[in-house]
Image (tube, rainbow, N blue to C red; front, side):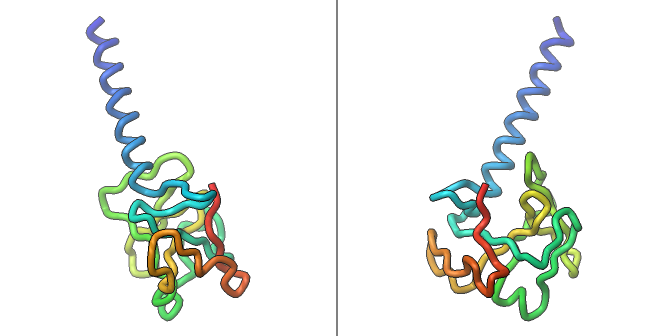
Length: 124
């Protein structure tokens, strides 16, 4: 009985951590992923899925800021964390790093969708 209670408590704790971690990463609005801050997130065609790195740095990063993860963030489900060139962690969805677009000024903006046919709003 004690073991079952301990197991149930551990399972419940794990489930709540997973749910809160995922909830803090992104949510879906109008068929697209948006960050916890409500801003649209994008993927970049030059990023290789599951490569563990980002192909956007330097000048690219100025226009397409990475969706940075914190050192304590825990990825769940289709989310992962990749390491940027400078060593900082960045959120990824289905193995592809996530970015914001510097020209998106308010929640719901999608000004970067299909930019140069290489940047895309991420659909779940």
